[in-house]
Image (cartoon, rainbow, N blue to C red):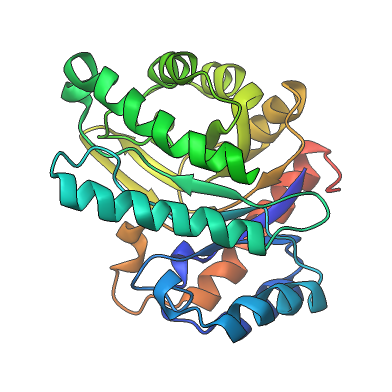
Length: 280
């Protein structure tokens, strides 16, 4: 396994600064976020930037395992859905441009909706994802769907049901265990069900359970990273472990994104050591 970092937590930091900082700390990879409020927003990427950023990563020995391109797939307004799907397709196209020798980065997204939608709108979501996955498969890209607390796909079992219904090689999982942790689902249950389908991961820290929970910076909460890493290894996961800093943390006064990346590295690097797992 390797250690990455998501720029979800650095929306206002120029890409050169965050890439340099992550490389100096010792991260092996980065998930770049292309949402509209980020410095690497899809609509801000000029042709020159689209060519320059892969070389920037290469020069700093950072891999790009995933791109965060979250859109809702549950919008029932036809025009809004068309815009969301178009953005997702353009993010898939970007992944093709930024492919390495190992292939394109995965495209992380969530589904949207609410848990109450599952029984009545699962067929609706399935059709939406099949449409997106068909485009991704034609381009050789994997969509990594992230189960998310409070969304239509919020548990391991619901995730497995959706994967089975969609039935596409272009659909896998971005496994963010924190969303299951705050629902009271244990590490072993989450990992045993999700690791075989995961092409990328997120980790946070957290305290409490739904509805009274908060996401935290790694090292500040209750999560047992050592047990998690050992379980991921035991279940055959060999990809990136990528901390993601929640919006809950980013909204705090005096939030310092580079200092948080540093604190996170110290926590995660020590967890690998304590677990006896050598980073690839």
